[in-house]
Image 1 (cartoon, rainbow, N blue to C red):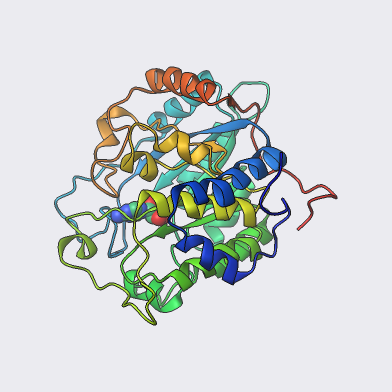
Image 2: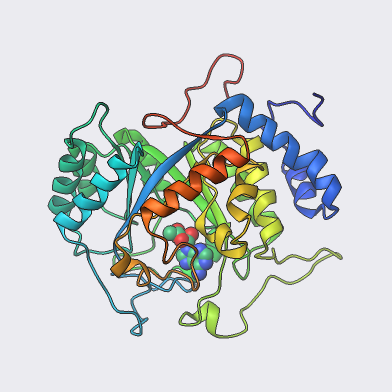
Length: 369
Ligand code: 5AD
């Protein structure tokens, strides 16, 4: 089968990415972007879809990010923190469903102390089974002492989205803690040194984000050689500054619209371009995408570059409280039912659930970046 351009795309030119992001014709997109991204995905990471059991362990958050429903000033949100036993019971459920990885995700919650998380991680790693579960942490910006402790306890991977590569925009939408401004890219590099597989990502269409910013986000993924990359549309939350009022958007310049739309199509374009820029990365088809298109979003993400799904294993009594944005998909689906449906949906698009931990594929000689 012929492809529009070679499989090995890195380094992609920024101007190419910029142009792809502006293509609007559906059949052109299919031909020059989505089909090559799908072929690239199959060639480099195969047809397996790795399933990561997501456990949203706490919705407490010390931060005031302008877009996120978990932000500390949102007093309308009831808060919860799962107990050790609750977390372990969700992890056992992941095991029973055959998932190779659990992801422990939370707001930036100082109540999740270093020793507490370390104990949970080492207990999960010791759960009976042929291969230990891989443990991914997604607990925000934490100090090196905690990060090291958790790595020693057995944590394998860490997800920390940099959200935008534009430092000015980043600081505008992430007011710092009293300790001073944050540097997520520096934390990602330090975690790589500590031996974590690292993951990051961005939101698409956050107010103030330009096309040039998005191009830089995608090339930064490749530059940092991310093992995991999650991208999803910005979804306004009414109890946040960016959801409550008409937000400040990037102005038009030279006839080009500068503000990136937070649309479904733009999300597919970014997934596809990310696959072409980072052929071996693990890329989820995210819940935010499934929220925009409940019927087909997840499948379309998987057919345009993604190879991971993160089924939600948070106990039903807490689900609705992990409201980073409104009307999140899968709020009410029980894990068992979701799993059965997911297997059918994967089969319908010719894909199969992954076996084992599903770590990032090691580069081979033909595709080394
Ligand atoms: N819309 C879309 N994504 C959001 N996130 C947080 N708030 C929103 C929102 N309003 C994303 C961020 C964060 C991830 C866990 O959820 O990218 O890193």
